[in-house]
Image (tube, rainbow, N blue to C red; front, side, top):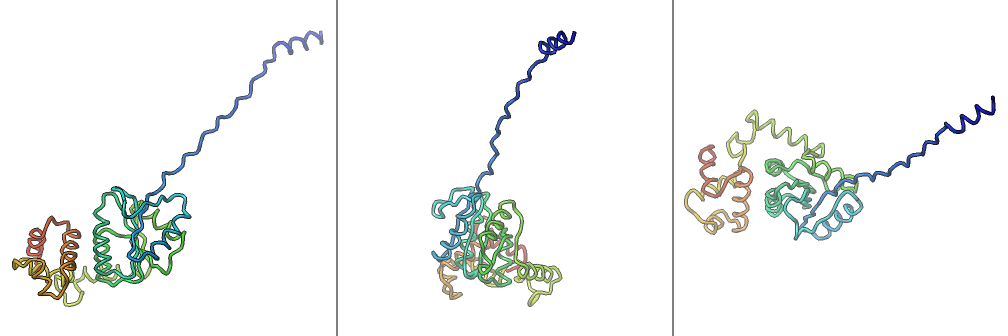
Length: 236
């Protein structure tokens, strides 16, 4: 009887094959295309060397930056006319977020930068590989990243604009800078770029940059539109 039970168990027990687990490849995040722009080749080389250590970043050549590049880094000592012109060109690129890396910036220029849609700024003295990677990831998400001292300066400036406590309490201090108003006033008088440059003792390139900055910041189509806007808003 015991032998029969053993035979039954032997014939009825089924061996269940072990299923081999399928290896599912992990999805890798798509690299973030980043272009680095700098007037100083050494500054550009330093930033590029940091970014090459970040596997989630794909560097693209600044001279062949494709439309839709995720992030553009602009490196400059100070925010002067050249930096302003470069920044204006970058923000016009479709779907491009800009990270600005500077040594210093004044309050009026800071307002210009923010008005162009740039909300990620780094001090050059604080640059590290991890700091750059964090700034790129923040910018591509459309978030902001400002040093604490710049954030305090910006908040204070915006507060003064709201309460009307700016210098001279004039319209030029609440959106357009005085030299922008001067240029548009001369445009309204019928002067061309060369005549305005002679009148204000600027170069023609500076005049063009000023007009380009105004039209970009206020989303205006051309000089005539800029003059009409300035008249309507009481700047001139």
